[in-house]
Length: 261
Length: 376
Image 1 (tube, chains in turn purple, cyan):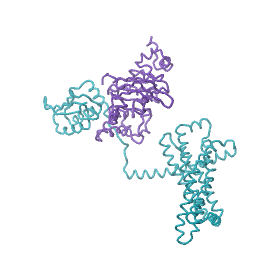
Image 2: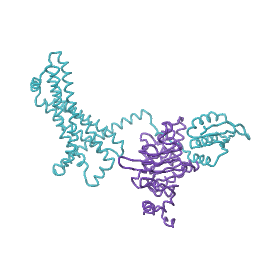
Image 3: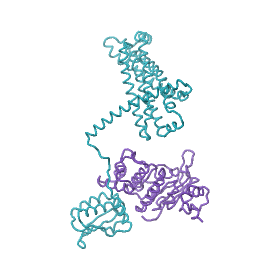
Image 4: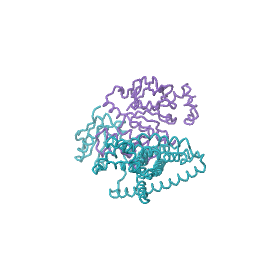
């Protein structure tokens, strides 16, 4: 799928829990075919934003359009159709613990598609291989897998229906640096091969450098800036300077200052 | 978006030409798979798939094409794609690179072996649990002995807190249940005894059964369901959260901090609850006798004194601290046996209630034999 038109359009979003306002007047557009990284300090509502777009959290105000459908206006049937066009990877995979990895991947296929068993099994095996899991992983239960493997399995499940858009909630959190780098490459490769649009909440500066086309920074209850990495590095806002030029940022991109100069 | 379609376009250069078009995606593959399978057996000539009119191809559609081609080639036929766009070629390559079948479920052994395995596993589990219970009993007793030598190590605030939770807060439910059982006993006993003109003996029936067995047994069962499960869930979620490990690294003894206050609280309060249950049961019986059998409260109390010896009361009360200890011990042990997952908290909590009630009833039966042997 080529670049063209926003796939997600958020206008004037407001989220509030009790007295605490999380988002106020938040605008964001996600373009088709891009990898958008969403960053922000703890408590700036990155995950809340993801949950709001996917409909797990009802906003106080504002308009969210996904695939040109206003989420507040859609009928239940349209909503189900929309949900099949996106996949979500939760932080620890959120696999169903009573099912094997392959059965987990088959859940959305069973629920939404009238597929014969042999075809479902073949496609589940295909997805398992696509996310880089060994074939033995298919018949294992989530409790028998490592954290990194659970994330890969969760990614395979989110790809089960071949969605156009996937949401990743801190995909590299809790992985060792090698595992995290591999996961980044996997996301990048799948995005390229399948023409996915990726909405990724992350804290990982390496991921931002390595795979994100654009970065959206959440601060002061809204999206402060959106743009490619180079824009982030030039931006003068104190939080951005600290985030992208702090000691860990230097470690992630050793020749960072030379890049700017 | 147009539905996927497939049609036989005819013979070309000595081979068959199959045209595919529309959406070859997850939503269409079931139908397309059926159509392909219907067509394939007829093929005996070289075959070309023309994909020029395919609008959308996802992994499911690409898999279908790839697999069909693979099957044909395995049968020794020539088969190939034509009219492949760059995007579709990438998709077909991705699929080809990931042709790696896998098991969906772990292999199942034959059902007879599986039943034997299950049975054996169950027996071993019970033995293992019994062993752990004995070991835990010893651990609690040695820690308790240590606390007697250094009474300052006893944690008074948690003790009082747990006494309130397991004792005071259980009063309404324990009282209500015992009261109702008293009423039921009086009513059922009276209808039977009336046949012999011996209604007055209903007082003996109530007094002996409530004091010796029913009040304490019901109280213990309610407490096992109410507090034994709470002990497991509280300690279990602390285990999941690594709080218990944190305690150990800080030099705190979880048995002393978590287990002893709960065990002592229950051992102190369960006898009090049992006494309260005795009174409520007798009171319920008295009201029923008065209302339905015209045995006045005065007469009821007089018969009561004749019917029971102090031992009837003590037989019930002696059991209370033993039951309390069992329930609290099982509750805490199952809590500490939680592994670091949320579902294990649920499993252990169920287990704690079942084991607690089971042990209470087994020990109650042993008490009955013992008291019969010593003749009280």
